[in-house]
Length: 414
Image (cartoon, rainbow, N blue to C red):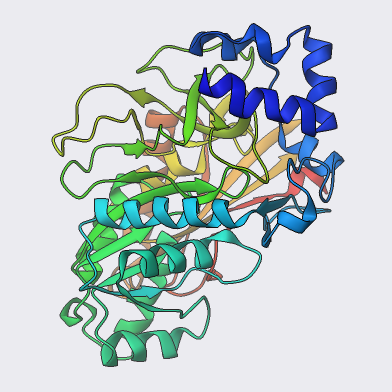
């Protein structure tokens, strides 16, 4: 079997961590004779990567490693990943495949506002765009005014960035007197953070584009693990010729059936430098086997609903920031910028939601604003079962982020 011979067997014999983990689990590569047998193998978690920092999980010698990347946004040491030349070529093909799924061709100009550097987003999109034969603008993050100038002058037809930064571009463009809907943009490919269907609608309305979701993580390969297609727009196609995907109960580790939400677990099939076995992503989704109207046959994963490790527990109620976002964006007059402040008064947890309002609504009478705050409080209670204090703030009051938006301030840890 390909998985046994080229993945499990290779990591067992080349990576000391996996030999020890397999031996402790009482399993050898020879025990894996069917796809279901993968469940006998131990999980890999992010702490394992940190414990083996920087190169302890590499399955290829450094003389064969042509690229190093590292995860961003973590405390302490980053998680380091490596690529052979073949890995780079595989990644480029997967990203080109993702761009094609979005309806892009070699005739497109792609404005790439993902960050370049140790983060995998920028270079992942860049190599995929070049593999496709499209023109790529390596803008990276930051310099928002210049980004808007380039969007106007260069006329790109597609943009790639985080969804929160897309909204920030739209907002700043409006402040500069730019009609963002009049740009040549027709497609946006957004990832690197969870976002809701209502946020998609907000982006599409403000930029006049089709907004599509892309999924990836540095530990597996980077962006290009799964991609939403322009035809279906109903789940992201997981590229199963390169990755085995499972969903598990995050508490028990047991597999859950298709259609049931669970934590995504990936095993890489074609990575040479840094193959991972049953890597727990902490991302929550569900897998769908139903055919897609686009004709692609790979299993699809639903948009990420949150992470099992950034779930907020407020007085015994489990809440994800993306759930709160869905409630907020369903109320007219609210801007898609908010922050959640979790604190503790005595022995009880408290949740405060600060959300921006459009200028015309925020200038209304105090009674009108109080009614909106009461509506938000009621909707949060009705939909999520948690009581929150709501504070409305003026437009452009809250901090903006050019990378991943940091929505939660947890003061309980102070």
